[in-house]
Length: 251
Image 1 (cartoon, one colour):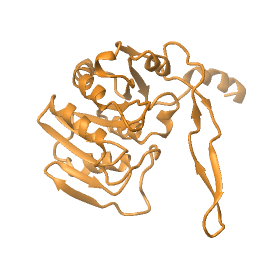
Image 2 (image 1 turned 30 degrees about the vertical axis):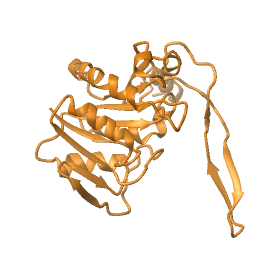
Image 3 (image 1 turned 90 degrees about the vertical axis):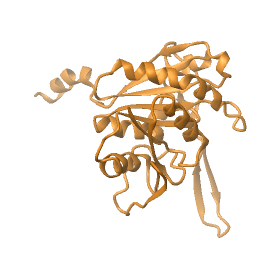
Image 4 (image 1 turned 180 degrees about the vertical axis):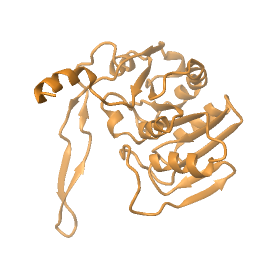
């Protein structure tokens, strides 16, 4: 199996090193193509107004001066164009990608881009409580077996799998559960200030805050110390609303 790894935290992030270890338990043909710098929160953005620079760091390891989406495109269409990857793994993200996080996450976007290109893709994130002590060992311990089971399933095209590991020690994980995407109450943490020259600025902070978690969602199972696995469909069409919409428009 040929595996491509990317992320949004950057080529030197600790999470991508963990993901590389996971991938190497499954294959000896592992490629890493990731952003040169932290691209957290860039979502599925694509660089079209500036040229992209690709730096070869080592054999099968490249840094790209762009977004996670750029990295997957450059990897599949140029760097690995002779033989496409069989699997794309994105992460392991430093922090959760739960509920509405999936709309902002560059980690999810890398996996989505791979899915759009017809490849199997899994996004992985490690939830933490203490920023100074991210429990990477949990993703490391449970990742290989989980990925192996997922890829054996051969899920439908157009589906990307989103995995979140709970903020507990590996032995404290209480199981794995397939759940739907949750939803949190949005906050309003936008800090306003002035720079040293007196020019006003706005700094977006934590826009999401925890609220009541509905059972059977990614938010609820992470609270229980379980690994959450959520299949996300690339097709965003609200099919159940289409007949009503046709009636409204008279078509």
